[in-house]
Image (cartoon, rainbow, N blue to C red; front, side, top):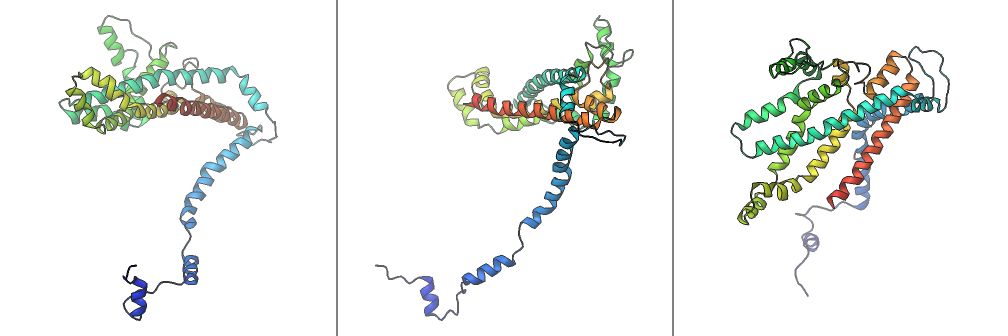
Length: 317
């Protein structure tokens, strides 16, 4: 049996002169009641979230079941008529097809080119700061500046793109006036503009890989290509999943650069679904119908997101 006295015994034996008295349970409950609740700190955010996020969502869903107009004419409940009209609207399907096509032709190069740029910089290329600045700087530009630059590049007579084609012996191209070329021209602009963000994610992931793996592989005689295929790319799998998901969601929301450059033309060949919703709501004044199309597109994004979440974990396993 131990003969060492506990601190409480020593404090009681010493009359409590040097010890700190323990609070009674009643005093503890009283102190807890006096402490301010953490809910008060969350309240400002909760109010803003409810006012600017929840309320517009609820109001938009309600509006989609009405024929509400921007002209503030009489509004009546129409049930699912707006949704039925959207399914039969050829312009909706055309705009949705343009959006999915744009997503396809931008997501793949934005992942592959960003990975190639990050690998190039990570190999220790001379002039590191210059390469990093050149790759990331376009991402910092606002959309108005980017579209202005590329309007000059795509200018039919004196633009840089056609000047290069003529120097190589090719005929000039109507970059923004040819239906078959306009979407590709906007995709090229978008890749140049936004690839810097994906490049930054890949470069950060590469710098976090442990050197011991590469040193052990080199001692076993693995060359540079073997180390790339067997170590680097598998280690970047999670980053590739993240970049791919972010890029798909960002491409589905395309609006700004297309609206400024072509306004959906020529002949609606570049009009994305968001621009069609904008035209229906603010040009055609049909807010109820525009809300219905918005929530159909929102449902499509949810389906794509769930599919990605279910698909990529299986790939990791």
